[in-house]
Figure 1 (cartoon, rainbow, N blue to C red):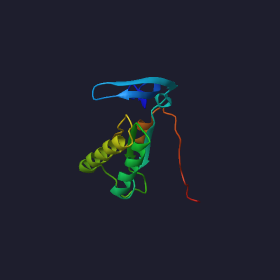
Figure 2: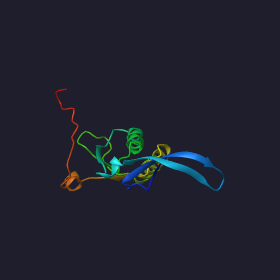
Figure 3: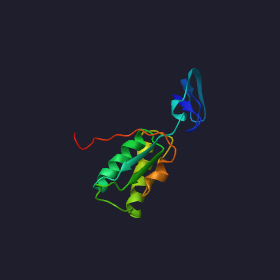
Figure 4: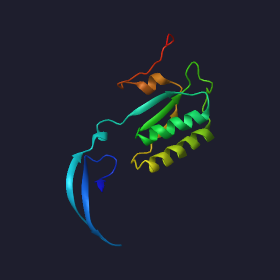
Length: 134
Protein backbone atom coordinates (compact mmCIF):
# COMPACT_ATOMS: atom_id res chain seq x y z
CA UNK A 1 0.00 0.00 0.00
CA UNK A 2 1.26 3.53 -0.75
CA UNK A 3 0.43 6.39 1.60
CA UNK A 4 1.05 10.10 1.32
CA UNK A 5 -0.25 13.07 3.25
CA UNK A 6 -2.45 14.83 0.71
CA UNK A 7 -1.69 16.48 -2.63
CA UNK A 8 1.21 18.60 -1.35
CA UNK A 9 2.98 15.78 0.46
CA UNK A 10 6.75 15.70 0.18
CA UNK A 11 7.02 11.97 0.83
CA UNK A 12 5.24 8.79 -0.21
CA UNK A 13 5.55 5.69 1.97
CA UNK A 14 5.28 2.11 0.72
CA UNK A 15 3.82 -0.02 3.50
CA UNK A 16 3.65 -3.81 3.75
CA UNK A 17 0.38 -4.79 5.44
CA UNK A 18 0.86 -7.58 7.97
CA UNK A 19 -2.65 -7.83 9.43
CA UNK A 20 -5.95 -6.02 9.49
CA UNK A 21 -9.47 -6.23 10.82
CA UNK A 22 -12.49 -3.90 10.91
CA UNK A 23 -10.83 -1.42 13.26
CA UNK A 24 -7.08 -1.73 12.89
CA UNK A 25 -4.42 -2.02 10.22
CA UNK A 26 -0.87 -3.13 11.04
CA UNK A 27 2.11 -2.97 8.76
CA UNK A 28 5.71 -1.94 8.26
CA UNK A 29 7.06 0.98 6.21
CA UNK A 30 9.31 -0.65 3.62
CA UNK A 31 10.31 2.36 1.54
CA UNK A 32 9.97 6.16 1.55
CA UNK A 33 10.25 8.13 -1.70
CA UNK A 34 10.08 11.82 -2.54
CA UNK A 35 6.88 12.90 -4.30
CA UNK A 36 7.79 14.44 -7.62
CA UNK A 37 4.48 16.16 -8.36
CA UNK A 38 5.02 18.88 -5.75
CA UNK A 39 7.73 20.61 -7.76
CA UNK A 40 5.40 22.62 -9.95
CA UNK A 41 1.73 22.12 -10.72
CA UNK A 42 1.05 21.97 -14.44
CA UNK A 43 -1.53 24.26 -15.99
CA UNK A 44 -2.70 23.64 -19.55
CA UNK A 45 -3.96 26.24 -22.00
CA UNK A 46 -5.91 24.47 -24.73
CA UNK A 47 -7.35 25.99 -27.89
CA UNK A 48 -11.08 25.37 -27.82
CA UNK A 49 -11.88 22.34 -30.00
CA UNK A 50 -14.68 22.44 -32.54
CA UNK A 51 -17.04 20.26 -30.48
CA UNK A 52 -17.83 20.07 -26.78
CA UNK A 53 -17.38 16.28 -26.74
CA UNK A 54 -13.73 16.78 -27.72
CA UNK A 55 -13.36 19.22 -24.81
CA UNK A 56 -14.83 16.54 -22.53
CA UNK A 57 -12.22 13.99 -23.68
CA UNK A 58 -9.41 16.53 -23.20
CA UNK A 59 -10.60 17.31 -19.66
CA UNK A 60 -10.94 13.62 -18.82
CA UNK A 61 -7.42 12.71 -19.95
CA UNK A 62 -5.69 15.75 -18.46
CA UNK A 63 -7.49 15.16 -15.14
CA UNK A 64 -6.34 11.54 -15.11
CA UNK A 65 -2.68 12.56 -15.43
CA UNK A 66 -2.93 15.15 -12.66
CA UNK A 67 -2.98 18.53 -14.38
CA UNK A 68 -3.77 21.29 -11.84
CA UNK A 69 -5.72 23.63 -14.14
CA UNK A 70 -7.20 23.45 -17.64
CA UNK A 71 -8.09 26.65 -19.46
CA UNK A 72 -9.78 26.77 -22.84
CA UNK A 73 -9.43 29.79 -25.10
CA UNK A 74 -11.10 30.67 -28.41
CA UNK A 75 -8.32 30.33 -30.96
CA UNK A 76 -8.51 31.84 -34.42
CA UNK A 77 -9.83 28.60 -35.95
CA UNK A 78 -12.05 27.54 -33.04
CA UNK A 79 -15.72 27.15 -33.88
CA UNK A 80 -16.76 27.62 -30.24
CA UNK A 81 -15.91 31.22 -29.40
CA UNK A 82 -17.72 31.84 -26.11
CA UNK A 83 -18.23 30.29 -22.71
CA UNK A 84 -21.27 28.15 -21.94
CA UNK A 85 -21.85 27.88 -18.18
CA UNK A 86 -23.80 24.62 -18.42
CA UNK A 87 -21.06 23.00 -20.52
CA UNK A 88 -18.34 24.26 -18.18
CA UNK A 89 -20.23 22.75 -15.23
CA UNK A 90 -20.34 19.44 -17.10
CA UNK A 91 -16.58 19.67 -17.75
CA UNK A 92 -16.02 20.22 -14.01
CA UNK A 93 -18.04 17.09 -13.21
CA UNK A 94 -16.03 15.10 -15.76
CA UNK A 95 -12.80 16.37 -14.15
CA UNK A 96 -14.07 15.29 -10.71
CA UNK A 97 -14.99 11.79 -11.94
CA UNK A 98 -11.72 11.33 -13.86
CA UNK A 99 -9.72 12.42 -10.81
CA UNK A 100 -11.55 9.93 -8.59
CA UNK A 101 -11.21 7.14 -11.16
CA UNK A 102 -7.44 7.64 -11.46
CA UNK A 103 -6.95 7.87 -7.68
CA UNK A 104 -5.47 11.31 -8.06
CA UNK A 105 -5.52 13.98 -5.34
CA UNK A 106 -6.20 17.18 -7.23
CA UNK A 107 -9.28 18.05 -9.26
CA UNK A 108 -8.19 20.52 -11.93
CA UNK A 109 -9.72 23.95 -12.11
CA UNK A 110 -11.60 24.32 -15.43
CA UNK A 111 -11.92 27.78 -16.97
CA UNK A 112 -12.54 29.65 -20.21
CA UNK A 113 -10.03 32.41 -20.98
CA UNK A 114 -10.52 35.21 -23.48
CA UNK A 115 -7.24 37.03 -22.80
CA UNK A 116 -4.36 34.57 -22.96
CA UNK A 117 -1.72 37.26 -22.42
CA UNK A 118 -2.84 37.83 -18.83
CA UNK A 119 -3.23 34.07 -18.31
CA UNK A 120 0.35 33.40 -19.39
CA UNK A 121 1.92 36.25 -17.34
CA UNK A 122 5.46 35.19 -16.39
CA UNK A 123 4.99 31.41 -16.63
CA UNK A 124 7.41 29.12 -18.38
CA UNK A 125 5.80 27.73 -21.52
CA UNK A 126 5.95 24.62 -23.63
CA UNK A 127 4.27 25.21 -26.98
CA UNK A 128 2.95 22.52 -29.28
CA UNK A 129 2.25 23.88 -32.74
CA UNK A 130 1.75 21.77 -35.81
CA UNK A 131 2.28 24.78 -38.04
CA UNK A 132 0.80 25.59 -41.43
CA UNK A 133 3.33 23.62 -43.50
CA UNK A 134 2.91 20.25 -41.86
